Image (cartoon, rainbow, N blue to C red; front, side, top):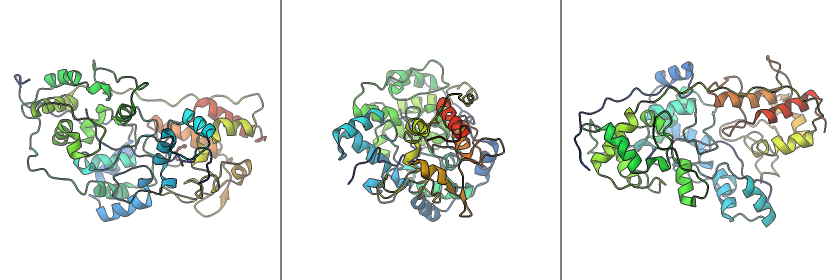
Length: 428
């Protein structure tokens, strides 16, 4: 294998796994809190989910294969992706020093390797996640795990396809005989709050919007296993949407019994304590999340901007991983060039000046420029970068898919650099 800079194809990543986390007088079962609706999903997406059919697992299985979910996730029911095509394993090999490359290159890569080192497994999704939540999340992804840099990308699928995938991922749900019809009966949310602190749930989990809970501990200096557990720990704000109360109780009590190999530890507790913690998680009063806003767009630079600077600060940092040339990426030009993750081949190569100038292939097979301006006057390349900022703020644009796909948005200074370079005639 020939080593090349950041060989992994940084691309899509899904974020859909489950959360974690003394007898006393207990009152009646707490009422379930209303399911959250502040996750950035638009009204149209919510309506589409509500109207979506139950889904066909057989079609969902084919879609999971076509979308290449196994390039990031384990537990898809598909054979693992080839090592060279597995985005996460490639990064894990680099981080662990197993990748065959010169020492200087390995050192340089590890200094910047923060993406796609930890990804949730989709194993036993049916025993942890609501089918309707999976369906809605696929249509309108949002940040579930605050310690992961990447998020689930906005795939090119509609409500029916999302229903099929959700049906497939939850097909093997085990209907446990002991699964109670009223799992929180007799539970105390007040006692659950005390246990949440005593059991150290805040060591890994954020619980945004819940007042007075312990903040998540710093990751720096943690051992590898602890770091991975913290990175994969969901914000418990979303638990009431993602999980049925009975599944949440079972998960808190013994996560490995549901999902073997999960980094979520089994914290010693009684079934009554698990019910109390679950009651707190699903009924705690949550503050309304303030609307997010995209960064302010900066004015064009007056100084000269060259391709070399834009390439160094923007294209080679992220863009090349999905929009490259086959030789750079071990025979695969990435989903933005040769296709992948359910996207058509667009022939867009951002690894060279000539490749960028050649543009992309549209749905009719015609070559189009990435510098052509849209209705708002922004070049298409800039519009895609701005769209990713808007997606992070919960305002996805149907006509423009934000880039980089599923990764943190490019900052205002970098977009300013790209836009200034284009305005100056794209000097080399």
